[in-house]
Image (cartoon, rainbow, N blue to C red; front, side, top):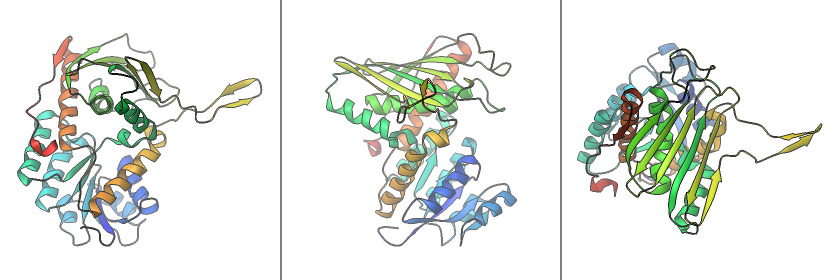
Length: 339
């Protein structure tokens, strides 16, 4: 679809993220509508579809993609299901926004990359929404001016109130630090070449056998270092912060001081409690940007290469967590499609 009509979107996966995207497209995004929802839970799919006029519920992604009402696909299902859904979208010639991770591991991500390269054109935008956050965008722009000189270090903090009951120690890397892997590459314009994961003693608030927090160090091909404190049971709120340390100055984002109150002998503000709240505006901009580009017949934003690189970085991180020490990141040669 190029520059005409309203984009009909099939949302695959109607869990917390997928349901929020259905709401977002229905209530906030212009130029698009949810024409189909897909979930293995048929009753849940029907309940979500019933909230949107003209939306059809499916349990099979391929059936939804074959519908004449579907012009594009938003994949928000669990990571292990992404590869099959992406390849089905390629077969139907449909543009895709795929929530991160692109796939759960580097080998499957590489298969998706090779399939897209065979198409000869980009079809996928990967959902690294921090690139659409106003603060991150401002930091990226500032670093791009060169006013601060070359970036030397990037300090990242990523904290959650509490981890889901299914969370494992490796998921702190693959599901959470994946975001810092992407923003490190994006902000610095460099590839990550090695990962070291250090293990402080676990917090008493962490579930038994969960290594939380963790401290991750990325090395880049530009000679910079990026560290990540990942703490998913901090107990007090959801915080994402970053500070770039450069030759002639520093820049920090994520302090959350948009409004500071003074009352009753105290000053302070509020702390977001989850990622949906903290990055609501970023998700809105991300989906609107994807819809606008798709209607123009273009694909912009984070690419399959970015998804593959993040998967390779996280894979190296999990190896470092489990085996100890520094682990190099192995990447194939970057295809010209992603230059």
